[in-house]
Length: 413
Length: 168
Picture 1 (cartoon, one colour):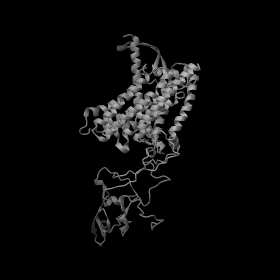
Picture 2 (picture 1 turned 90 degrees about the vertical axis):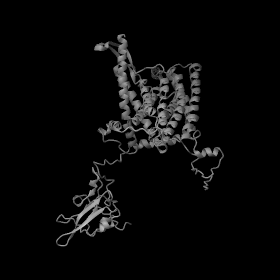
Picture 3 (picture 1 turned 60 degrees about the horizontal axis):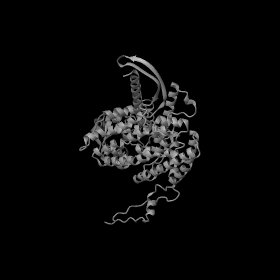
Picture 4 (picture 1 turned 120 degrees about the horizontal axis):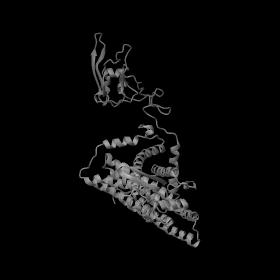
């Protein structure tokens, strides 16, 4: 092995350790943040007893969950029951490996470390564990693996509530994956690549994709909510109907793992939204083109701010909107988001063709502004129709359409 | 068909989904900025908004006279009226013929805190108290004997509102 390869291995391992630690601590703190945000929205204070302002609450929860008894339901499929938390946890964590969280860091070292031998690294180090050329395709592929954990947890518990939760989760995640995948095609059209670093550079050159691809962003965000099983789409664990859904039968640390997986998924979806639609670590203006360590730190901080903002929005929505009815959920996925994403691909294709080939505009900023105009028109139309309830109807609206007058309640023997 | 399903009348026109959702989001955000209403309980036991009612019926107190003896004359009315049968009373009599309780125990686990014992007591000796922090490490500690009942210092319940004795 050359010193360069060993140096690359060393920085990779360091980045892995950093991302893994940050992810685990961040996820633990997110459980606290969730409880704090919910408390503030209900004029309460939230947990504030353990540690300063409750900061050690996640540690206390963790200790409690480790010390609790692990229970197995009778007739549960023990192996799958044991495996399911890991199956939902691992994909959630894997995804954090491909999100670039700061501008590349200039690294230059050449040293000898005892048994490791000579290590060398010269040049810009991308601040991402694995800068995969397949970018968000990897995210789409791995995030859909998460459904195995949930479906198997539901099935192996040998409990009807858990089974129903698992079934709902698989149906929901499969449905929304379609819309999610389709909503990212306009991004591919615009940037010409699926790699996150290329997408970020394209956004630095032009505008953040949220402006030229606003409806894509909307579809992606809604599908992201559904993918992570968060309210308003938390039907897999709807406590009013299914006790606790797929993790009804889980206790102690195995239950915790589902929680960690859920929050890790939230972080991933928020990081995806930030990276794909809000410029990743990009700071608007010319400032962030100077390079250097300072730039890496500043962009990392800015990425963190954007990420926290989206995580806050996720929590904000959770504590505001009520849960969807199951048929409304499916209707939204298949009858609204999927056709919308498909139509949007057509519109964006046409618009890009028009702008680039007919009007001959190649400047990325002007192109983005042109697409933004298209989005304003289409967005007003879509939100107007959504708002008037044309797509998703109340129960009586459906009945009127089918011309069936509501039967009077008659109870006979 | 046997059972018809009641169909709710829901608004048909002038419904909004996106606007209503945004309105809800604005409302929850507004609440985030409002002052908190939580009372920090163990440190703070009453606020200007809330304090425990003087009519609260909690764990009992036995009042004592000037010599420190219990006011109880062991008439037996309180075990008689007690609906939960939680008062154990063994009467005794001294040389002057004054009756006093040899054993007076209240099982606070059986007690339903109705306050009848206080109402029925001719000597105003036994009272229910304005007190609710009763945690103990064993079940046995919840049977309060005479000494313990006498040594309690919390306020006694007024049972009714002094400003409205008729409950109107």
